[in-house]
Figure 1 (tube, rainbow, N blue to C red):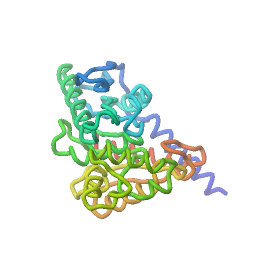
Figure 2 (cartoon, rainbow, N blue to C red):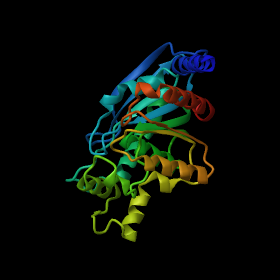
Figure 3 (tube, one colour):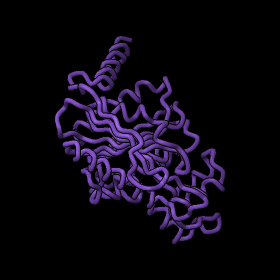
Amino acid sequence: MISKIASFFMMLTISFLAVFGVGVPHPSGYDVMTDVAYGDEEGQTLDLIIPEGLGKELSLAVFIHGGAWFGGDKSYETDKTQYMAEKGMISANVNYRLLSAERKELTCDTQLQDIDNGVKKIVEICSEKGYSIKRAIIWGKSAGGHLSLMYAYTYKDKSPVDIGLVYSICGATDLTDTNYFSKTEFTTEQVLLFQSALSGKEVTAENFLAEETQSELKRVSPVYCVTSASVPTIFNSCGRDPLIPLSNAQRLEKALKANGVDYYYDNFANSNHCGRHGFDFFTYTAFDYHLNKMIDKYVK
């Protein structure tokens, strides 16, 4: 009993330190910009918060919203932008053009290009204001977790910022995973629609296993983009997730381990998609502790 009590208070202490950043300088104020355009089309906008009073060389956190690639908006995630700004980082929330059955030219590739153009705009704004960016963390949830991983792994050498860490909250990692058809709430038609729109190739039940189709799906799946030079990664899955099969996270962990990439992963066993159930308190508290340690090591 004593050891359990001690463990409980230790985790409470870790949680307090991780969340409130004891001993870390806090901003004196914030320079807030909303709906900044980085392109001419709807969806090509971003929000930006620059913490003041911490010097002119800061790290950057870029959040990518979820919504199954066809929906969602940065306005649903303003708390995420504030969360990283309070940690003393320039914090951005980037919209991107959503996939559409009518606009087949929009794919995972164009969404990644939007994110990159958003990052370029952030660098431009910061430079105009006299700030330089040290390193960056790219993070997102669900579809945004998938895009964050894809951007960090495939744009690492051409991004305008030095990507030090990527953080995925229940993001899709492997679009070839047949568990999407049997262990999620998506219908077969919905899964095929996601696969087709993201890859830019019409995926059907008949051609799904064809070599060409599998090659295109692998091209837009983070698992198959991992190399020994990939960005350090932290990610979680949820045990009661009805949308992303657990096998996705397990496959990403296997790929990262096989390539010797530094990572931290855990499963919130009692939580729903992108959620944090109270029964998982110790798990997500430890996860946040590791997140802060990795930010300190790879971003700040």
